[in-house]
Amino acid sequence: MRSSTIEVREQLMRLKREKLKLEAPTSFSRFLGYSNPKYELEWFHKLIADHCQMLLEGKIKNLMVFMPPQHGKSEIISRNFPAWALGQNPDLKIVGCSYSSDLAQQFSRSIQRTIDSKEYQAIFPETYLNGSNIRTDSRGYLRNVDLFEMVGHRGFYKAVGVGGSLTGTPVDIAIIDDPVKDANEANSITYRQRVWDWYNTVLSTRLHNNSRQLFIMTRWHEDDLAGRILKAEPQEWTVLAIPAICEQEYDSGLSERHIGDALWPSRHSIEKLQKQKARAPREFNALYQQHPTIEGGNIVKRDWFRTISLAEFRSLRFNEPIHFYLDTAYNKKKKGQDNDPSGVLAACRIRNYIYLIDAQKVYKEMPDLLRFLPQYIAAHDGNSESKLHVEPKANGESVVQMLQEISTLNVKRTPTPTDDKEVRLRAVSPRVECGRVFIVEGSWNDDFLDEVCGFPSQPHDEFVDILGYAINDLYDEDDDIDYDVLSKSSLGM
Image 1: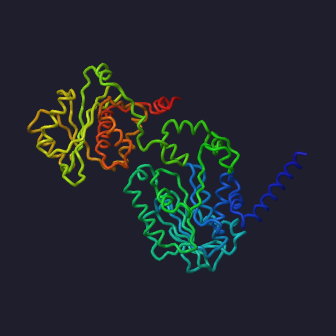
Image 2: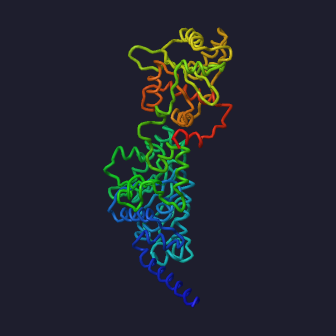
Image 3: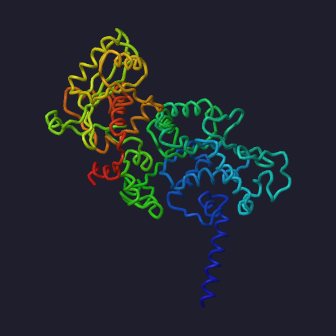
């Protein structure tokens, strides 16, 4: 009886396998299960596969797929779709792009292994490569990690890193799989512009009237490549955005999920996702929910700052020194010109909290600035333990040298930053988000908050710089704060 049951199961498995083999050539979602019997095809995997098939069939011209990390998007689109598409049409010219040539080459090797497999050759015998153990008539066709050609056909697959050359390469299908590798690149306006320039001057110039584009991305930033394209031509694209945690009942008709359900609970449980969200809500909203900005705020939100009256601050402070942070201008304010002012901030740390006491901007030439600084420090309770931190840029180095000669102020040079302002602000923003930065109430508050919370769209950013200097300096020797606990506390968890 037991032997009979096993035989029935084996027969059913063989029949299922034969059914997949019959359907795989014309159904991409079935091809996924056929090419890899261990593949776990979830509802959203099939949804993505069906959209890829619609793109190949011309029902969709341009497709963007936004999904959380580690949910299988690259396996479907970058490793399997090119192989299946070339099986459908070995004359296709496909380019696969990623943030690095190494990753693009990894995808290329995976596609080649699939095409070489006996399972693939059984359903697509007209699509094969030079060096295949199955064929002997393939001489003269290129095959390496950067480019492989279909023997006997005009089609090929080319792997290229973002920034790489595509000169002389016509493209029928362009696939971009995550053009940025990490938060530092995503948060760098210089890198985002570099990707945008490459897309417009390299990739898009290789497209023709019937070319199709397929982007798969985890959204890092509102101004990433996808964001810029959708802002310029939203009507040209079909967007499939699948959040890690369901936000609308049944995903607006795409699934059977309810609000709050995890996308792939067997791999990424709701408990794991909630922990990730509590640890870094802004990043979670971008990477996992595909919303690069949190409603109501930019990089830093107003309600992250806590406020305290001057009287309360004075009652808390015992003898903790107040330190000062200066961002110098390149020139004084001139009539008819919008030159930057100098920004100065007074701040103090009491236990694990930072208190911003005052911030000002002044348009002063060197002699006036040198007279102003000692007066400002004295007016805000500076003493012999106070330090004036100056970044040695613009005329900052001259300020440091002259103050050391003509005053008794304890002047220090801040480290010269290597990242751009946006990257630096994002790096210190968790300190603010966790409720560890207080603003002492004063007439300066609104101007300060408008600039910091409006960055990067504000015309000036001196307060952004000196806030970063202050937070990095005052927490420099003590970084034992449990941000998981603090994030939960700030979220009311």
